[in-house]
Length: 251
Image (tube, rainbow, N blue to C red):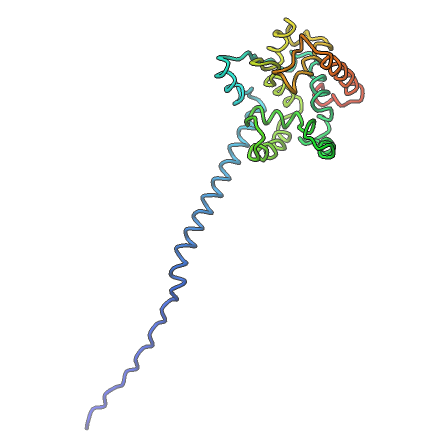
């Protein structure tokens, strides 16, 4: 009997993966890696900013980027840190009245001042003391969008972590009052030959009046305009003391 030969069915060939998928897989993998690296970079930057702001609540900044630049240009600057308790209260009130009368009432941005500045077509008076402190301590001077974006991001963080009194203390110690003269201690001795604790209301108001343009104004040789501005600041300082808008940094 003839042997039957068993017929074997040929196995169906496996379908090859579409060539498109084979090409796209490495791309997708590369995109994921780039995205992961980017997110890790953002997380690291956020962590560093948070750590620096937390540190700034208790550690006095030894200098700032602007001070370093001026020190190189002028071959040195005059600045000495002084705690808030050694600064005359009239000085603190004068600076708030001059630069940010609603300092105790906002969370870093004065919305009313911003709206007023926009309606007047100017940004004068819209920058709060909190924003100026962030700019002076952590950033650089200039009007770039990058700096503005960083300032807008860091300011609420500083407001959330630092007490108002600390914000004002730092500002008073890093603000420029004359070319190469930084902080209220150096300014008081430079202009009036007294310590910051001995400043009178008139002296404090004249110091506050030079802040918008410290390189072109003099607190000890005030122009008629500066005298008028200083008188307005003295009145404003008395007002915020009377209506409670100084309570957040005097308590």
